[in-house]
Image (spheres, rainbow, N blue to C red):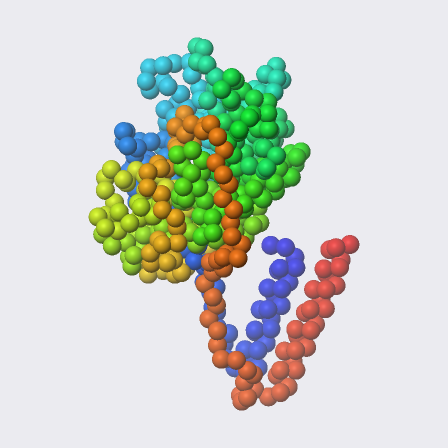
Length: 484
């Protein structure tokens, strides 16, 4: 805790103690209520923890989906929810490193996926495990070995896959590059080359493209690719990676992160939500979660609060969940998904989408940057009634635009993302500042106004005033000393 904050705390305690001695009334200890978005994040994480089986989240075609399990582990780590499940998930992911970053389980040897390896490196650091000995693998050394070197020309610094066969262009994208920067920054010294390559994926407008490859091969930079598609999800990832890189001292990272955050603000819908690109263009909780988390990391508190409002509108509670009230805490991908679940419950077919949406969406509610998960303590929370996800969450999801067919993005779910790079840039959606929602906070209880008229002599108030004035002078002097 900073010196000035410690002094302020001590002064407040001394004043309250003096007041108690004068009046004979013991001081009341009042715990500040947690912001509603923090409580909502923890409710979402608690629901997600209940979806784990033996430390893993299932996929639509397998009992364990390791990409989704990592997403869930990161989400639980961001909120501090359910330590036993986090520990079990960490152990299981460590046992299945090659199941995620290779094709060994399918009998195809000699392949290591660069993006998956980088994501494993980040996940190990975020889960407070040893990235240099994770399931017997040195993920930091492995990731560094997959960074393209100077002989790769303008691809220098790119996270790449290793293969013994000619498999064509590398499939790595901006999600993968961001995880590489985050993982390397979290596990030791961060080389400049991966940061420079990530910055080259930023177009002049400020947004980042998802893929660094054009139809005729890799393009040197985003501005060199005609019609490059700028992507909200990729930009949100890049902003957070660059903020971590800037904290590590990387050149140019801070300016690029601020420019990316500026672009994200222009993409926010009037209700606070975000959409992605291509098949995820419509407003959805995955994009809103990542963008809200990035905006909070960049200090754009008002915009982050508006994103949290949009996410809260898609969260099931005991009051609004209808047939799905038993799944209170879960966050829908979009309003259609919410409405369908409230009418008929979350079906087995749809449950996978809910898991993916919740894992990514709750990051925008927790508002802990990717670069700080596992380093900073999770935001404090206070208990809420069972099934109440957020004290201020709307009872219906009417605030969020409707999207009917787009699946959740899978750029974080497995070795090879299924989102393809569209051919044209969608028209940006500009937020309407005049309709900005207020930050989601729980107001402090207010008591009757005015000074008391009985019970304490005027000399008591003079003593308290002298204590406060003396403490203020002390803080001023110490503050000047620190500034000097």
